[in-house]
Amino acid sequence: MTRQSLRQAAWQPHAGAVRAPARMRDWLTTEGSLTARLTASSGSFRVRRLHQRAATCLADEARAIGLARPGRVWEREVLLVCDGKPVVFGHTVVPTSCTAADWPLFSALGERSLGTTLFYDPLVRRGQLEYARIRAGHPLMERVRASLGGADETLYYARRCVYRRRQGLLMVTEVFLPAVLALTPGQTQQNTK
Image (tube, rainbow, N blue to C red; front, side, top):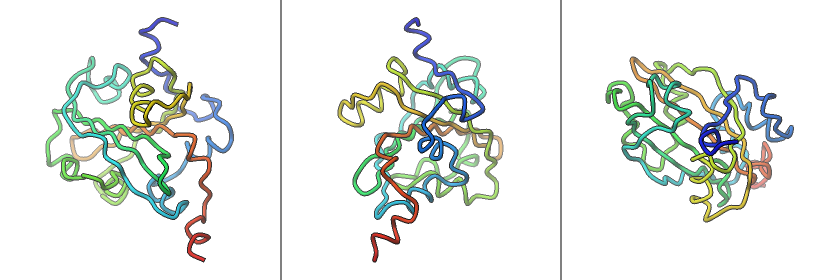
């Protein structure tokens, strides 16, 4: 594989195409809000915002968000943390052509989950989920490693989705970290007994 090919993931329309283990596939195919599922599966949930700034989108994102080539976007990266452990790395891009009317709460999210706005806004339309394996050489792999202080994983499973609101597009990519497999549904109730 060339260095350039590693910088792009092979996004697939079916979760089975990435050959994830069954427990990881269960997380990848979560219906509805991932935030709601993580909250229900842990004693404590929080969003750790890494940054939110102007940036250039990744090479394998451009076409999906309506750009002919990598261009300027608003980028937000977070870690979703359950019981003190990062379980998902979130990467969101919004083309700079979108207006505040398209995504009114995006700039003011802070440490709040994007999912809390996406799934409860009747104007938001969710697109088709896509799935990929993220390997060394892909920019998201390097960002995940940096956010975790140099993790040595060689492969992560990810999903992404384009959301539409009014005339605006927003793409959310979620990279699932190995710690997500330690979570179990109903853990919240067990922790409160």
